[in-house]
Amino acid sequence: MRLLVAYLATTGGADAISVGVRLARTLGARLDVCMVVPRDRTAPLLPAANYDEVLVEQSEQWLTEAVDLVPTDVAVTTHVVLHDSAAQGLLDETERLGAAALVVGGSGGGMAGSHSLGSVVNELLHASSVPVVLAPRGARHSTADRVREITCAIGTLPGSTELLDAAVRVSAEGSLPLRLVSLVGLDKSGDASRLRRATAHAEETLDKAVAALPPATSVTACVAEGTSVESAVDSLDWRDGDLIMVGSSRLAQPRRLFLGSTAAKMLRVLAVPMVVVPRHDD
Image (cartoon, rainbow, N blue to C red; front, top):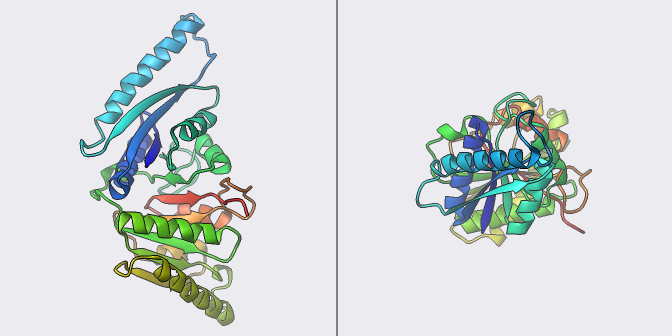
């Protein structure tokens, strides 16, 4: 298995490396660390051809520094890609390498909270055909060397089956505990009938996950309650090394991502990595 880390020589890049290392150790994967260099740009003091060479050389130097952030027990390869679009360059490299997921860090702009999404990450969240892992700010300071537990935000909308399947696969491959959280009914948390339906759905999903996983795997389910999505998610117990998996919006095209409004609200309060899983063809 290969995981592609989109790298920038910033704290966000270091956060992405840290989360990538954690996932690689957990899943027995290798890391591919990639930087995209824009093409056809000219600098005032350099000919166009020389400018590309300077950018590539600088990127390779930054990637050498990035490798120093990867422990010796994790296999790592670096790549410099020339492309007009940073997002498309990353998507093309992900496909070329056959990477199972794309890990990205924050840019310093975008959403508030621990996750900060820039324009490139937003593009990836609308176009990727593989899961995108969003590393929160400060992930580089984590002391967790592996993923501790997977939380899967389950629902009843299209794409929920693919999400549960993905969470079960990661749980099985990494021998990880799986926590299923039902967010159904968050818009009307005081509605008893919606809460009952959410509880029933969580129990039904729990039965499916238990049946699909090895007997020794810890699988739990709960319903998150709150006056808002943010307060419900914030009420859950989160620890260093946790990650959450969410599905794409129902607006997503088949085999593509689309960050839904509920997941976007969750990002405002989450300090753990979020994995956004694409929808598949029917």
